[in-house]
Figure: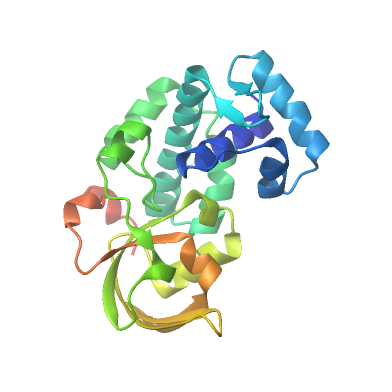
Length: 237
């Protein structure tokens, strides 16, 4: 499968997983491509039995499509863990490189990397590897809907947020990664902003990017967050 086709499937997986009913136009907007380009790719994926176009023109992945998308996402996530925790790349860089590498590894290498990393159930941003894992995890609430003057635990950086490289860089610089706690100081609808104190100090962001971050009120169960084996984690300072 081409890199472009993989990207389309991952985007559809993200949109359907969030409860949306994507159409070709909304998919094109999400991917920053023309409607014609998206329509042509949907035709190819439909001919391969990976998606279907419903009578109301909404798009839906078939069971084969979901299996393919989960496989792609799993390999992408494993590459991200490897690149961030072993190679030492940042979130934004690792996402780009993982896209290039995810289709190049064999099932044997995939299993070996999974063993090396301690069998993560999520990507480094906290998104579940598959729908079975997702059903066993809390949904969380958008950071933009947290109570002012309250503590929260970062649960996951949604896949839509992962598509914004600048946002990923900012979150990493602020230390807002899954499993850490932050204190929400103020939410202002008038100024369209949220201010907080994270593990690396005070910060702020707009309400739209904050809506793409899922949090749990208070202190979350540490078992929700994957930690790579100490021998691997110790390779990076």
